Image (cartoon, rainbow, N blue to C red; front, side, top):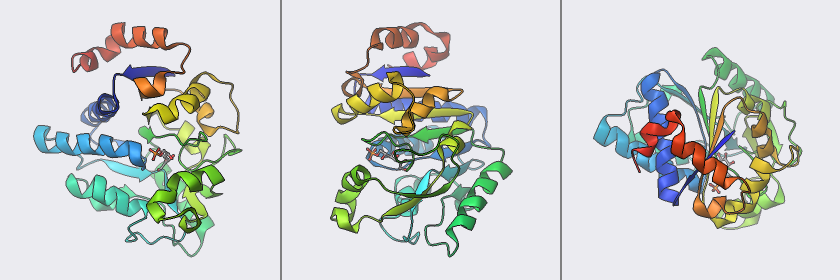
Length: 264
Ligand code: F6R
């Protein structure tokens, strides 16, 4: 795992967008795992700008989102399909047939989950998985006690997640109780993962996820087992990290990060 600290949220989101762009240019057929939520909005804003100004090409790229609420139709304004259309898909040259989200209205949810895993496998697995982190440490909707070997399945949302997402639905009791989510095992199999967290509200959980003991109570700690995970944070989200001096030195000196340093 490596941790990159940027001075502010915009800088952190821009770095994540640059990592995605670098991977996409190296492999136009990239299978890109996507996340939703407030934090990701700035990443998508930068990607849209890069598409318009630098011609970043998504035409051959395939995407798989982490999750979708059970019971919401794709056209529902609260659905993650709608979020993705609004924030990314309709602004870039992604072929909508190449974009995948679980269908929260599938008549057979277990079959839907199995089919989602099969589709990921058919395209050779996720090349780069984008991740956010919830206050309780979930990645995707892998709530506390999610098995580290879990695959795409239906999860019941934890009370803190319902609270966190209440504002989008106009009250906690209106938030769907269940979601389809990629499993922790699905996420761990991605070839590269990038987790973005910004703001003081994420400082505690980031320190726990990155430097704390591995536990199924906090799904994000599983990323310590990921073959190649980059955690990108702003100063506010970094302030509880014990090893930040070391993390800063890696970004400042390692050749891998040279082209990103030049953007500062
Ligand atoms: C959603 C997802 C979630 C969010 C997390 C953080 O697709 O994967 O794990 O990334 O809940 O959400 P925000 O960014 O709204 O704090």
